[in-house]
Length: 240
Figure (cartoon, rainbow, N blue to C red):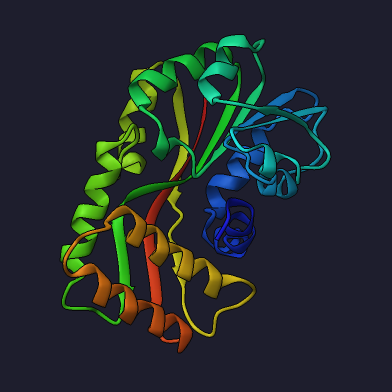
């Protein structure tokens, strides 16, 4: 599945997952007459969830994804490069993004330019669950999560944000869980979303001896409307 199709497929999953209490707190603080920047904006689904603001900038590496954004400015490239070049702004949104970066390096850059509220959503926090259980689940999920830690981001970004944000000079106002929960019968494009999760694990762990059978069983369960997926995540709202 290409990136744009994946982002469309996960929209309904995110809709259910976003923590309503944290969202309400952010919306109450949102400066609608200011400049809001979204990092890792993709196709602009977070923009669609917000009230109109004076200025909204979507930042993403994917030109293909940004081409689907309407009603906002776009900036194509690395978020760290954007922060080096941009003027200070009034609010920040980042959905399923901060678990891809080094928080200790990235947060100081962000908070140096942000003068106002932030809404960091769908931050992965170390738990992936498929039901029904499979004998090889531990042999799959352990190295899969370790692969996240081997890259720039972290498999426990959600909990790490709770201490990293105040350590870098910002204040947390609200936090709560935003777990992905997908179960049959799958609405909208959520079967395609589940197939993409399985494909991502397969690509990341290519060569693992137990992978082929596990992937085949999980794909069959999606096809048969039998697979349940849960991923533990956290949302955080605060002020920089």
